[in-house]
Length: 134
Image (cartoon, rainbow, N blue to C red; front, side, top):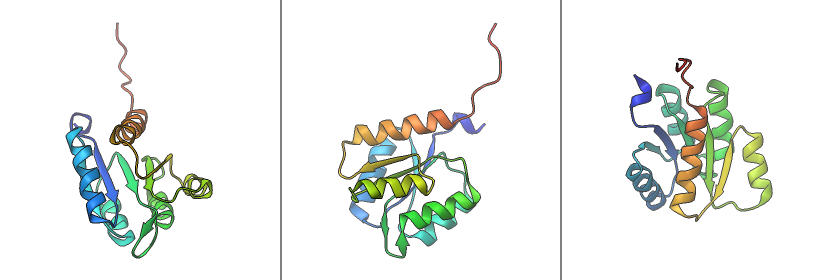
């Protein structure tokens, strides 16, 4: 059953050190992390596998994280998307939310803050049991 497995996060980040650090932090909190570094890899992975959350950077070598977010929303309207980006202007956050993201976190941030956002969004998105307790 899917709910008993570790939550899966697709993390698209072109900076290798950041990608490795965030992956390590999330894996220490029992998340399974799949990574990519381009829009092309992000679309391919998101379209071929099931994830509980997408974590995206704003700047990728083949375009904008906003573009990736919009492409993911074309086939997955429900899975939460979080931007984790150094783009720190309010307009960056506004554009991400308008593109379909649920949250925007500015780098660098405390690992606990990133994990709290990821956990909250995954838990709020997972289906609730319809079984009644007597």
